[in-house]
Image (cartoon, rainbow, N blue to C red; front, top):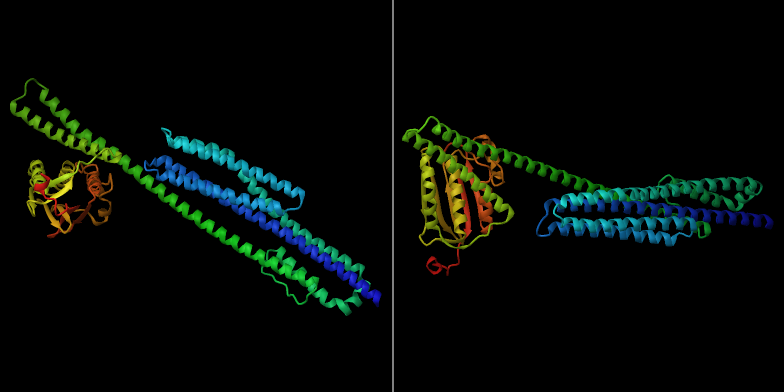
Length: 528
């Protein structure tokens, strides 16, 4: 009996040792799998950071913002990419330190060299992009740098990711092989000890076999990806300790998998958001390009029409000797009218070009509003009369003044009046008024014309926007209101527009400009 018990003890000890070794090996393989998955996740994040850096660099090259905003965005993107490199290096270093296998350690060291080469390529790219942004043609230079970088960066990065996938698959295969060997060894041991197994099972082995079966079932479940499996620990022997370690390993693996799934979901959301932003940006660029092409078409038409009329009148007048004085005067009047219209169009183009390049410098001073309205009326009254309209001005107080650039504010009012003249039928009136409302001076230009449709009101201050009236000759280039808003914004004021197209007393358009009133102790007499 003692011998049988000794044999049973020896068999039990061997089984427990085999089980502990199997669990330890399984734990090592699971740690290799988790490490490979984490490194693959970090490589994916690194790829995303590099992609973000490329997009920010292209935007910086295309917009070429003078205030350095896009340079700051590029620097932030580069910092995030470097942070991704550092995180991967830290994880890789920890894995190398944990691995005791010399061959695996050599492979991990080789990956460290690959990562160092990728990081060196990124640093070279960052320096090239920084130099390209200061070049005369930053867009082309940045694209060339990115193309060269992509040609040398994509293949090593893809190879590194494939190596991590291969390492994960190898770990999974090792776990399955370990399970297979465990089952094989268990069956072999059972056949060899069959004679003693019956007695040992009856005396001591029933509980042991049940727990071993439970461990085998749990290991099989883990191998199939069911990380929620837990073993029931009932004793305090070595097998119970091994089962407790198995439970801790399964719990740790479950937390790792949950974090990995959450990170993958978050990464997908980020990718979807960036894709939506990129599509929206492409749509905006397409709209801008369409507006600019339409603008150049309209410019060509607007400039060609008066030039054609001018040349036609001159050729008809000069044809057939000396024309009568009345015919000559009529031709000169037509040429003069068309030349003035052409001059106004060229002035509009010059203003919008200066506003876009920031070449306009405001010469601000205290401007008498009443005098400004009289000057504007004197210049625009012939245009209103020619259209059969009445131009009226009113000023609440004679001493009303604003701190502004007199010339630009006058041109803004003249442009608003010209718009009102263009869209008002004969017999109506245009009223320009000025009053003080609290700490602001309010200027209004009101007409009783055709009005602006409600769905077009949000776009009237956009450059090159002409609405449904844009196909008619003489409707302008769609830059007058945009230029007016730019001038008012430069003065620190606000501009708003209200319009109604239905018949009634409120039919027409009202443009309201609000500018800050001077301090109470600053008067027109003191300024003069």
